[in-house]
Image (cartoon, rainbow, N blue to C red; front, side, top):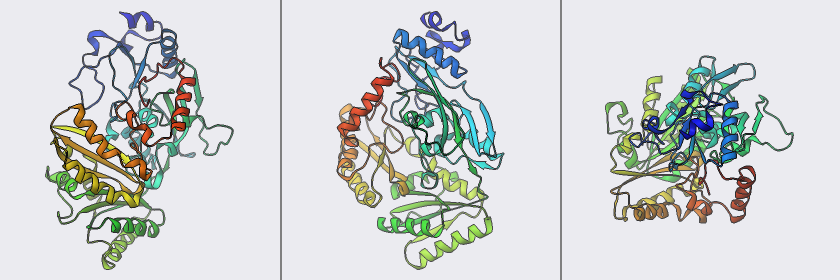
Length: 459
């Protein structure tokens, strides 16, 4: 067995999986019925073991694909059969929570939801939050610079990482596990690995930036018929909440109807009378005052005819119900024959007209069955889910072009927070200049001269 021959001196037998042992492995949590195609799967338990693995792979020119929580949506964890797969699932230790410096030191395989639970016990908050938090591992989150539901207030993953440790393709360990916020001593090298989709190095450990946990959480659903009113309301709430606005999610009417029609657990807070539904959230430190302030702003918005209708969460269980509607995208996917996902970014004022045009154009494509749009409108990130009747490449490309072709002209992006992977690399030139792509290629070539790490991803 070739994997044992090369890796048995640095890994225990149980950490090396190959041949029949791969039958229960897979490349994505939505494709568990498809056995993984790989040379082997390795399960390192330390940065040192990852380094030893990469030294061997570099010497032998073995291609390497990194697996974390397997929740990505752009093909970053797909394999063809000849790759060494390094899974970070055993790098799952929370090493430290420092309440004084408000930091947390973790290994790459720690699941995001476990991070939330651990810091909540200390009265702290790691604000990154999205629907796949129960499966996503922090190493993959960092490698894709994930966004989520609170980017408006706290920023992308990039803004929440203070220190980082990564292993280069040749096995060199780059480690800067500092807890400090300010460090202007030369290049900020950790940024090379954040968002590079595992193509420049394998993230093994990180120092996360924490916040004091809020003691109040207000939420509401609001109805609109005019997209411009959505933008006006965003500005109104953000300016009046003095930094407390943490979420502002927009759901198109037909998406809202489907999201709230599958069970009593996601029953609609507002009737199906409006074209747009906004889910807004504010975090604060005084429950009574914050709730009163939030309600007062909603009432003023109604009086000024800025909004058409609103329903405010009256309890923590209401807040959970409101967000369950937005987060459970399976209520869309489960009713599709085949699904195609998009994650675009565009200027906020143009979202209404751009998405309306996509709805119309998609509806005219033969083979398209469902069209759903929703997203993080406050940071210009809209998600599309398209249901289609078959997996023909021609249909996929026609849908791709329908979504993407207008983005370059308006300064948008084909990927707001999911990355490029293999599925979007043909469209990278729509949102990056030739000079930018050339520089990216130069960085890849310099740091991974044999091209072994996550080969074929991005470029």
